[in-house]
Image (cartoon, rainbow, N blue to C red; front, side):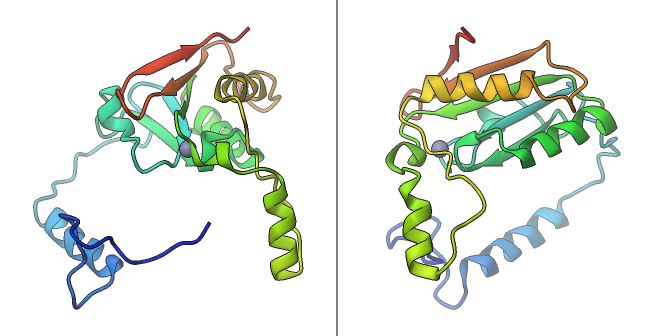
Length: 182
Ligand SMILES: [Zn+2]
């Protein structure tokens, strides 16, 4: 997995010749702030829900779920995996900011399906140390959603584990499919 600051040629959102992609984001923010008015919102999500999802660029959580600014917490990482750090965020979300429902979203064609834990070994060979974290690669997306639901439901730190539902988002159709907790 390599990262690059470049944007493919021909993209409608191509980076200006003179600037980096970050420069472009800063310019967009200046336009955003010029039209911005303080919505006067509380930090507590209006719908009392936290959404845990993959960081995949094709997944627009707000549009896909009909969410508006202020409605929810969004917690994202590679795979939408329920790691210790996701439990940390959910614990703060529930105990300090009043959420009580948890929605987990994985998706079709996820990059984690093409990785294995061997990735950690490859990193170790390259840089001389093995990461402390697990890759959390998976073969069966439904099974990984079930495991994620289980991790949330069994966490001793969370106040609310009765409304935890898991889904697979289809990147071709835009539809969510619910996974039976089994
Ligand atoms: Zn993904």
